[in-house]
Every structure is written in structure tokens, then in C-alpha cells.
Length: 585
Image 1: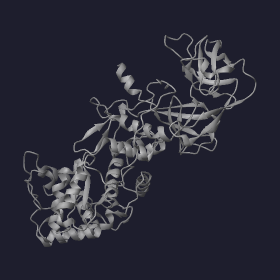
Image 2: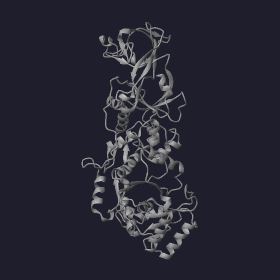
Image 3: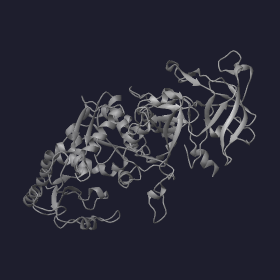
Image 4: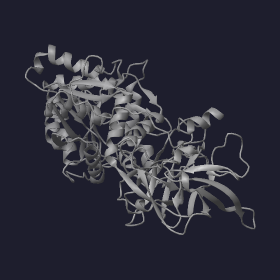
């Protein structure tokens, strides 16, 4: 990746290692099963309640932002389990907080799931179950297992206790069943202001697990809901809505991230207390990625404070940002496959993500030549005409065929492929030196032309017509360097955005006192240049992914490109240059 202006060209014979990018559709074998698959198979073999059932999972995002790469792991896991075992997976929106949710996020989430290659078996919203959840809450009140509490949030925290000290019962805990039902109905009717009262489960204020210390089930919130409008002014908490929604849908295994492990006893308590169908909650490690923030709140801050262009900014770890940058669904599947399903939280090196997209694009992306920092070459002994040379589109895919490259006496090469006073073992172009032009001829630099300020503006060279690539005489002369080029008379000028990591530090949130993660933003995370490219590239459709030879993989931007005027986003370089920079420090 580009870092502080540094860039190194790859040799033309560079070939990333190929890996299998196929998603496993078959029942996993014993050596490839993750711990969740092992537990699922054990459950179906031993639990009578699952007799005759099929695996049923769900992906339950809250529509309060755009999904990120961590959600991609959860999507692949939940939908993948259903696919592996011939079961079902629902998409359910946990829309229980109307002040932060809207339909824009709903639509973006559905687009992301489809783009990743999955289709839900049923589409649900937690708001579909508001009436049933309310009736179940009344049932718990009647059973003496829930009560209306007048404590305010600060008071509730004081009564809750600590990890080492038990909490205290609310002074409202012993209200009569009749009074609790009356108050709860009046809460629903909108008689009380926001925050005036809550409905709490009556469990145990001395429980070691703080989640069992009379947790809140409902809060008052006079807010317009994106689906139910103003019908409700009490909204269920996640812990109350989650398990019961799973039960209604007949979910067999509720797969959550590890932060919900301590909530599992509450999940179980609600299902058991209501006497309803009881799914099994299981937890896996959430994914943290180096040089990345994964908090929706922080991602929203980046967007609202305009540190990025939006949720789909190609520097964002959102699925929409990765899609716009040029990542493929297959590369995200491969990434999730490589990191596996773990029991303990860890930070994944972003290099794993970048190598996944490299490996997939290596097999599918057509190769082209592009010059990002041009210096002109004039071949003085070449005729004033145009020659067309054969070029291979993708050496990894014979079916990709070949293309015709225009070649003329005026070319552009990369400025870094010439040095006037080179070090030893510099095998590219230099005064009096020779180099092979990719698919073309060997040229020799005879003269360096400079402007009045001493800047190199042109190289005058001669070519050897007996060295044309593929000709019978081409192998008679050998040179150590091969560089890429484009014909100056035929090249198209396009905008290229050189994207880099958004944050400078491996852990963006590791900051000294008085600083925030925003202080770690990389000021060089994007740089725009005008490049000269093969003429065919000017006509590529938005979303097309290609390799610029010796440079990296690029994608035609889907928002800013215009017909005949594409904008290319750099997806990833041909190899990790950050590792090399770190090694020099």
C-alpha cells in the first residue's frame, strides 16, 4: 500500500499464490468443523426437542447504521450454517430503538446480504412482535415475575450494586400485581413522560451475573418508529425482544457474538419463565481488525463529522465501502473462511483481508498497463506509424484471451523506472542502459532532455527491431529489466484514487490522554492523480475490476465515474508495503 508517498513497482513475473476461493456448500468433514458445527450436530443427535426439525438460524442486525466487515463474518456464519445443513436462515431487523433506526439502513443491510450471495428464507422485524411481547410481559406481571419501577436511570445504577457487592431491591419491587398491570397499561397508553417508569423483570438483586439483577424489559420513549409510526410509546429492550423473537420464529441455534455470553442466562430465564419454545444461544468471538474501528458509533462519527465522504467511502470498513472500493463477495467469503470461528476475541491483521482480495482478483482480473507518474520516451529510430502488439489479458485464465496494444514512437513510462544516476543492481532504464518494454522491444536511453529548472521532461531512446517479443530473434539478446508503458498518442487520461489505510496506528483507539481515535486518521489515506492508461480502459463499466500491471488492483468507481471518464479506485497493491515500512523502523 502507498504510505507517505512510497510506492514500489512489482516485477512483471510477480504471481500471488493461488488459493481455493470456493465457499463450502457441503457438510463439513471432521477436520474442518468449527466448534459451533460440532455443537449443532451434537444437539440434533441428543435432544428430543429437535427431533424432526432442521437447523434454523437468523441474522438480526439493528438498522442503526451500515454493516461492516465484522457483520460479514456473522452473515457468512449464520447463512452458511443454514446452507451447510440444508436448513433456513431468517433476516430479522432488531428495530426496538426508534430514535436511531430508519429505512435507509434497512435497505442497505438487505443489499449487503444479497451482495454477499445470500437470500433469507423469511424477512422479519422485531416490531412484528410488539403486541405478542407486550402480552408476554403482562403474563410475567401476573406471574409475579415483573414489576413497574419508578427509579430513574442514575438511581437504578446505584441500586444495582457492583461485581463484588449485591444490589438492593427497588422500593417499587413489591407493588401488587393489580397496580403493576394498571401502571404498565398506562405506560402503553402514553400517560407518562420518557424515562418516568420502566418495566423490570423480578429475578435476583444478589445474582453474581449483573444481567440478572432485575433487568429492564421496557422503557418509555415517545418516538416515531419507522414501521409502527406512533402506535407505541413503550419499546422492548434487546434482551427482552431477542430470545422471544427467536422462539416465535422457531430458531434452533441463536448465534451471537461473545459480548452476549453473560446475557445468555437472561435469555434462558425469559424463555423458561414464559414456558415457550426455547432456542439455544451460542456465542463466537467477534472480529476486530487492525488499523480499523468497528464501532458503529465511531463509524457514524466519521460520517457525520465528514472525515470520510459517507458510509460507502472506499476507506470505510463497511460492506458498502468495501464493495465500492472493489472488493468481491468471494474475497470476503475467503477472508471469513481463513480467520475461522473462534471462541476468544482477537485482532485479525488487516493483511489477511488484503491478501484475500488479492488472491481472488489474481484469478479473475484482466491485466492492463497504466502510468501513474509519467515521463515521456521518444524512440527516435521508430517510424511515424502505429503498430499493434499482442498482450495477454490474464495469464491465470487462458479463456480471457488477448488484446491488441497500440505502439508508437512516443510512449509514457513510470518516472521511477528511470534513474539518471542509479545505484548498483538497478535494472530499469538509465543513460546508456537498455530495458525491455513489456510485449514490445528492447530500447536504449541515448539522451536525457531537461527543462530550464533541471527537471527531466523527456528521454530519447532507440529501439532494436530484432527484439520484438514473441519473434524468432527476440531471445538472441537478453536484458535484466522489463518495464511497462503506454503509447502517448493513444493513451486515455483517467482519474486514479490511491486509497490507503484510514488510520496510521494498528489500534486506532490506542491514544494518549486528551486524544481520540480521530487523531490517528491517516492524512494521506487518499491521493488523486491523473494517469495515462491503455485506451480500452476508458470504456470500462462502473464496478469493473482490473490489474494495473506492476502496480495493483483497481476498480471503476460506481458513483463518480462518467461515460468515457472513469475514476479508478485502488483496491489493494500487489503486495503489502506497510510490512516493509514497519521493518525499516
